[in-house]
Length: 128
Image: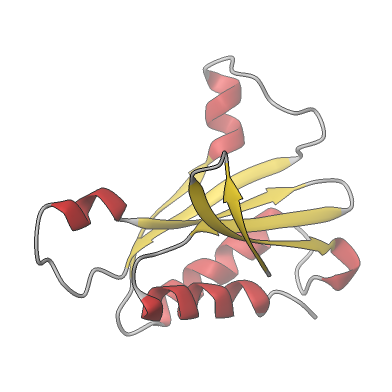
């Protein structure tokens, strides 16, 4: 798992797993696993699954031809609602992008350590 800054502005966590290193065979299986992790977490609530690749193709957007599948698990940890500004960083999502020989799993750094720890743990647990 690497911490990076995307576009010189967005703090993200990212892990690339070769398919031989991953416990799962495709993006769908990974998404299903992550949904289960969210649903069994005492502070998280599952919101939706989003097929980003299907959406981009539907609107005739640009897609890297190496991407086989791309989706998000959307959820919220929101344990406090102290002000309106916190709404700008919620809900959370974990993205899964499938390539011929690997998966890239990433998410934007949450402002809550408990969320960061949980999300990092879920992603790391994808590894065999």
